[in-house]
Length: 244
Image 1 (tube, one colour):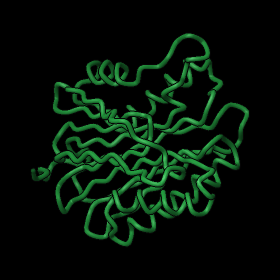
Image 2 (cartoon, helix red, strand yellow):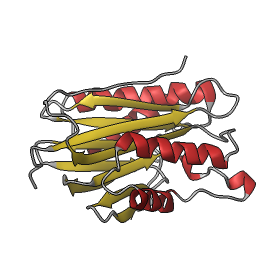
Image 3 (tube, rainbow, N blue to C red):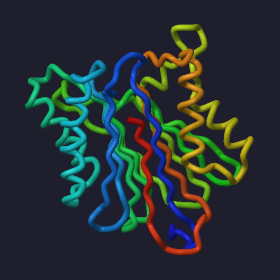
Image 4 (cartoon, rainbow, N blue to C red):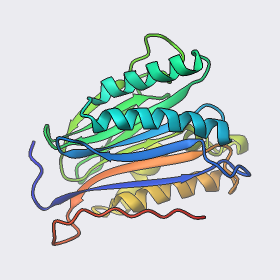
């Protein structure tokens, strides 16, 4: 399905580290695809802090380099798994999500090696789908494969992926977070204003709130949105806010 010329893709990332840990074990990278489009790689390394960051960096660099060379998402995920398993002897794991917008096929591809589901909203009514087919983390088991979902690009399509810090937010206090319900309510409250940045920030803020402003784990959330163009020009833009 062709994307209408008055549409644009928005990608937003929001992430925080575990409370009292200065370095997040989650790594998120974006790369342009050689045949058009872009891919986002999100990795959550085992444990937290510096050791987890080292693991997630290894995996993210491998996946990004392969995607930049034109390797397909599924093959890149499997190669990253093989690389980590060989490097660390099958003793270290990481979750890996790759979300790609492929302008050659006019699709969005969601590749999951994670127990965390992905959320997809379709159309102005915000019809929701939960992508929760069981999927294993990479780096340990020999035959680990990603679970891949491919969807046509269309207006008012929103795809949300996140690491398990978001999924477990509030559990310590008996108030577990339900990201699917949150996305449903948020989109209903702001029809046709489901901008990626606002939704990513809202999800992360709610998760942190449920953990009483002391995140129990690293939290990362990524939102892809296909919405009516906000600009009259054809300039591609990216912005980053990185507190130091």
